[in-house]
Image (cartoon, rainbow over all chains, first blue to last red; front, side, top):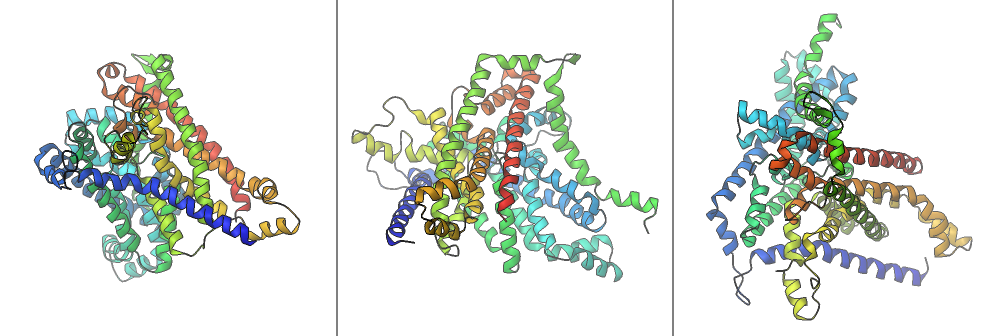
Length: 280
Length: 284
């Protein structure tokens, strides 16, 4: 490569990264700036907006509800998915493609479309069983299904499920014991991956909760934003930071380097294929 | 070992999962499709006829324009960023940080993103306050952040990183030897892009643009948090039809809109799959 072309390329790269860096870092930086702003011009930085979070009972209720939903959803989706995926690998290999395509299906259905179908179901559920906000976790499990599936599939691919379970069975273990004491410990990092992704997704969910009229964290942030922008932006920053910490933690969990890289590649693939709107 | 009874029992293992997705994935889908064509006691197309109401037509047009603008702008800007990333050292920490950041930002959106942009360039933001005092009032003709033009800017925040994620493998597939071969045969930079790299990258670029289009079409939360009045895009109209009093009187209306949205997304994703196959042919 000629010297002038290399110099031009370097200038192009520096300019590109600086401009895009400003565009992507700016909104996040100014969110912090906004949430620590004092009242009036030239007033000092203050954490008043952050401290005010506790004074809004609706907001606190929304935070609690979203955290509960995150826990219930991530545990629920694992409880349904893990035994099925193991069983299919062992006994029903013909079903594997079917389970995979069903699990990835929610990626192609926008959440705003799905919620149209959920609306009458939740109306019925609300009058006949329970109108608790926690029933949302039934719908959320569908939203997180593709992500959980990808993470677990990567984990199960890295171990020899068949040999492990046959060995355990021949030593007299029952199926629940095989599951709980042989499979689960061997895919612990995949379970953690799937769980963290589910938590991050549920905490950011707005579309379904808002349209089914359940006040979760994001719905409360929006309604508070109409009266007290500072505090609602503070909570938005906090939820963003929390999700970011989860995602960083996610990139550190995982067994061997190879398996971890594979998991990450699969996750990137999942993100790349996702146009369901997810939390958008 | 594989007796008839045994076989039927093994199927039981898949029942909890299949039962769950039947109720919470296939049932809602069936409710939408059936509801879109149902009326009091029979089949009807009147729900679809209602789509010709002016505000729905303008929402569909708005959605398509918004998606086209953010897909094309996102694809072009994303391709620039991708090229800047691809020309660096493939094993550098910098590249790894940038691609992971793209992975996170492509998922970023919704309420938080809307608030981030209000704090970044909104009417109360430090940037606007400073610039408007220095004769650069970018809201002089109205606060565009809270209508379609604002969405066009805000959506780029997740469109560009998504473009990087899906376009980077194609750009990485371009071999430096091809450039050298063009050089040694006397080709200019223009020749290289016009006759070598351009045609090779075109299917991947078009495919990625389509994916970005579908991505923007499906987005709801960002728009709902940013736009206070009216429903200039289809997802907001669907939401109105589910939650408003008027909408509740016509349960089939939201479903017909949902069918339209999923149809557009389906057409776009089929086109995407076709182009993707074309790309995969040489990207091995």
